[in-house]
Length: 203
Image (tube, rainbow, N blue to C red; front, side, top):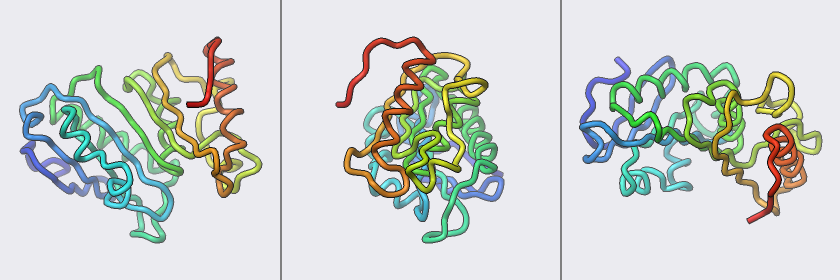
């Protein structure tokens, strides 16, 4: 089964062909906490993602269950496909039910391929999330090797989230490979246009 129990601590669950690392703070074992889905990038794993985000410890301190899936196969060949989204989303919904997650505190973040998945989840399941934070990912990025061919969320036509929610978009100003910094502004412009926003800036 995907969830043998709901006890506190670190667990690794096998579900629908993937492994999911789940950190459950002691305070969250009884329910009522939030959840953060944190998805790694190309060639990575859940452990490598956490080594960079530190979300297991940060989540525990702030009252969040943290879910970090691992793509197949193992690093360095690990890679996500849009066809994997359904399995990851299914696990998230199972976790929300099993851990009695506060439905107003469901968040997602991801880096590179995980960022693209985050955009897609926003487009497909906007009603589920309180916020998303995609990193190093942008729609229709012809200058980048991944952006031109990897589906994300264009904020045009059918690719507009069903509702507005908070987005923290992360992109390194010095990024040049795969998804260059030059791809970030068109993504931001599309969001501003689709949602009729008036203020924007780089922090």
